[in-house]
Length: 558
Image (cartoon, rainbow, N blue to C red; front, side):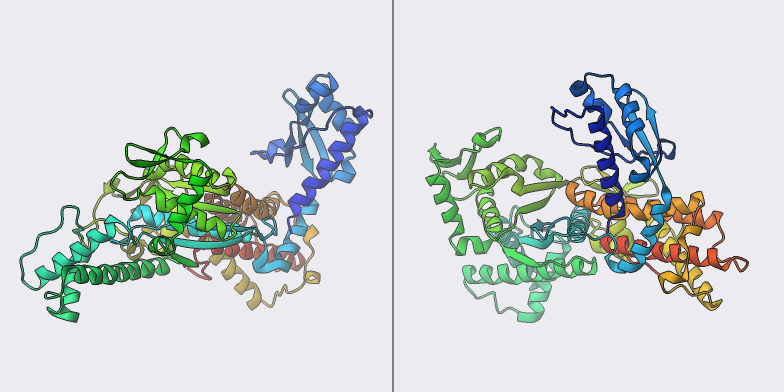
C-alpha cells in the first residue's frame, strides 16, 4: 500500500474543489495538479505550482489565485495543518503528520511485500544486458552493466512488471572464428609445435590455458584432423568453455538469466531472411553500389545503413534487427537494452529498425553504461596485482566482496562515469556506504534482541501505541519509510536503479540520526519503548527489502 499516494490523491481533490469554488463556471480545462516533495522541511510536505498554471485561465495574478485556493481549501478534509504561499504563487502544504504513523502498521503487515505495487499491471518487459562476446573474462564495464541490468529487473518486478532477463550470445561472425583460430594456435603450441596467432587473435592467458586443457584431454588427437573439422570443434569447445566461465562469474555476482539467446539461431531459423523480406515489402530497402541499404533516415537516423555488404556478407546491424524483431514477437511491450558507452551511436539505427518493422518507438529503450575506473591509493589501477592482467569482475569480487561491488556499481546514474574506490570498498566503517546501510540493519537487530531478552515483546498491533511517536527524529524516520513505494515506482518509470542505493542510504541516515538522539529501550516508559520498537521493526523490514532489490545482504550483526 502506498500511503503517500493516498494522501496526495486526497490533497489534489481538495485543491481541485477549492479552485472550482473560485470560478464555478469552469469554462476552461482544469490543468493537471502536480505535487512536489520539497527538499527542505521549512517548505512543508508538499508544494504545488497550480496557481501559476491557472493565471491565464482565470486572468488573475498567480499570488492572488494562491491566496484564494488557500482560503477556500477544506484543510481538515485534506489533512492539512497549514498552507503557506511562497514566491510568486507557490503553495506549500504542511500536513497533519499523525496519519504517517499508519505507515508503520502497513510495513509490519506487508513485511517482505512492503514497497511492491501493481503499478506495472503485469506488462511484459525484457531486459537484455551483459551480452559480451564469449572470448574472455568480464571486465569492470561488463560488471557495471550486469549490476545495472539486474537491479533494474528487480525494480521493475517490484513495481508490478512481468520481467525477463536475457543474455544475447554473440556466437556468430568473425570474433568467434578468431576465437577458434586462437585456440588452435595455443593447442599446437601446448604440443610443442610452432604456430602463429592470427592477426586479430585473442592473447589472453585464458586461451593459453584452454590450449593446455585440450592437450590434457585429447593429447594430439586433433592434429591430424582436417582444418575445417578441427576449427569447428575448437569453436564449439571454446564457446562452451568461455560461456561457462561467464555464467559462473555472473552467478557468483547474483545475476541469473532467464534466457540465453544464440545469435546463430537467427541464421539457422531463417529469421534474418524473413526480416529482410519484410523490410523489402515495406519499401525500406534499396540497392546501391552492390550493397543492400536500409532507409533508416526515414525514421530519424543521420544516414542510411548497409545491411548486406557488396561481398554478400551481413553487417552487424542485420542480425541485430532480426533479433529485436524476435524479441518483440515474443510479446514484450518494451525491450530494454543495456549497452556500453561505445554503442551510443547505434541507438538511432536500431530505433529506426523497430519503427520500420511496425513497432512504436517507445517499444525500445536503450540504457548506456559509462566507463568505470578502478581507483586505489588515489590512482587509476589498470591491472590486477594478483594476475598482472586487466582487472576483472572476479578479481573485484574476491578483493572487496559481492555486496560492495554491486552497491558501488549502482550508486551513480548509468550515464555518469564511475570511479570505483577500491580502498573505500574494503573499509569496514561508516565511510563505506554499503557498510553504513548494513550497519543500520545490524544495529536494529541487536537492539531488538536486547528488547526481547528484557521480555519487551511487540508482536501485534495492540502491543503498541503509535500516537506516542511525536519527536522530529521519529517523524523523519516515518516519512522516509512512507517514501519507499513511490521511490520504486519512480525508479521503474525512469529506469534508474541508482535511486535504490540513494534511498537505502537516506533511510540509514535518518535511522542513525534517530538512534543517536533517542533512547529506544526505556525501562521507565514501556509504552513508548514498544512504539519505538514497532518503528524499528518497520525500518528493519524496509532496509531488508531495499537491500534485496539492490542484491546485497542485510546482516543481523557486524
